Length: 277
Ligand SMILES: [Zn+2]
Image 1 (cartoon, rainbow, N blue to C red):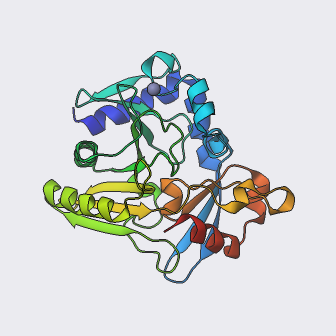
Image 2: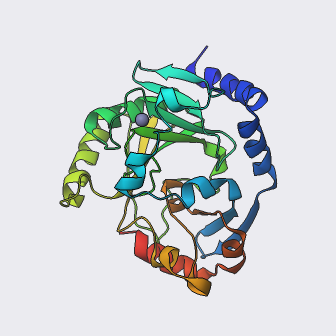
């Protein structure tokens, strides 16, 4: 059996045996979506209360250090099973899904969320092994809810209402590289990383990787910041949006119903202006 087949079996098994996962994947079927037309493309806004655990999470160093790491094998829920990848990663069903097949691919050691050429190579291998998925990476200050434990995520390709590598001119900055050769992608990424480098541990960004038509396609979203001003506002001005990688592809995830009801096209433009480079 291929890795992809093993993963589909893992989904079937976990949705049966793990009540939390079963409930949250079932809830996805009734998710509400609003569509905003931007001419050449649309931005979808998804109301997904199960994501509150991630969208509203405190991510300061003190909070992170004080909590048991939920990606370390010893602290995972007893129902959560895993599949090995390359002897380095545990492939897990994400119990708080955004899409119908949502995976977390966690390093099997507790090491910080920092991308490197070695990790990028793993990401390309994952994309090649999982052609029905898009692999994604949230930088430690760009949406990762476990900045202290290295992980990728993956989502089913058909979740995305527009191709991840499609451009959103005037709204979202992205760089796209494609090649049948992993080395070419790695070189292009290395150059971009240098170009974006600041004095932080790594440039703020989200990364997507897909293997399609026998080519690797790498899409990088350079970021200015993780959360927009509205997240920290009070009262009527508050909008709790916390854009991670999936939001940058044009599907904004909103965990509070009041925010879903009131968000406007102008809010969307303003939010992307603040978080996209
Ligand atoms: Zn850990």
